[in-house]
Amino acid sequence: MSSIAVGEVEVVALTDVEGPFFRLDQLFPGVLLEEWKPYFARYPWAFADESTIRGRIGGYLVKTRDRNILVDTGIGPAAFGTPGRLLADLEDNGFQPADIDVVFLTHLHGDHLGWSVTEEGEPTFPRARYITQAVEREDSGSREGQALAPLKSLGAVDLLYGEEPISEEVIAIPTPGHSPGHTSLLVSSGGESVIIIGDVVVHPAQVTEPLWNIHFDEDKEQADGIIIAAGHVPGAGFGRVIREGGRRYWQALGENDARELRAGEEEARGSRKE
Image (cartoon, rainbow, N blue to C red; front, side, top):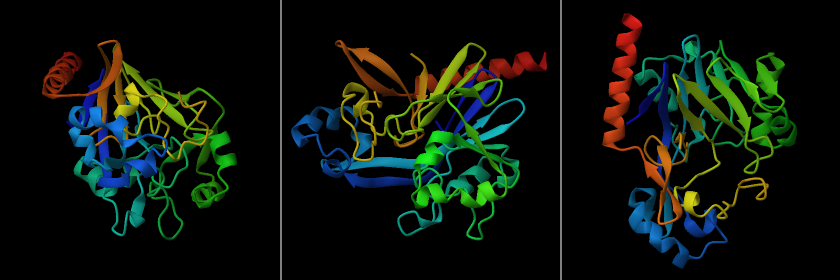
């Protein structure tokens, strides 16, 4: 399932690259192999083998009534030696770069802003406003942070200062920890909600083990019902947090959810026609 309906809003998962990326001991240096073993059987699709994570790099397209919001732009042309496919995935869903009204960057790490600018330093999404947290940009003096410099010189960047609305249905909510200005997007419509969480969770085991910080979390003290969209979880990254035996677990949206969501979307379309 690559898309879900949230009231009158559609959220589409876009993939840039998917596959085995990091060894467990590289990404989670403080976690012993023995501690991973219960999760190999529970989430076999999230491991390449018993030493390597399987993940995804991509973003989400949020289609509201009046604008198209692209959340993160993947790793880009330098995706592990071969270009990522996010732009092709966008086109497969019926959209061109010029159709994007807003590019929202959850944070300024290289695997989230790769397609933001062309090789010539022009905006890949020529009509879009590029939005991120001010504290995120101020903190990122690295090459990733400098990637926005051409956009800033063109006046295409809007900076946020805390929690702010992006549209009637979308609110930016600071979720610092992975980076100082890391921000999630809460999408609400018709009594339904989904939260796009960027790198708050990069592996489903973290739902049960919230103290398992990844190597790239910069402020581990800050990193601590509705549908969740997690950009690094394999597949579309849509899931829920469930309780089982007094513990929390990740539950990927399955076929039953897909049927319910499709039925809800068809019912909503029928109501709009009436």
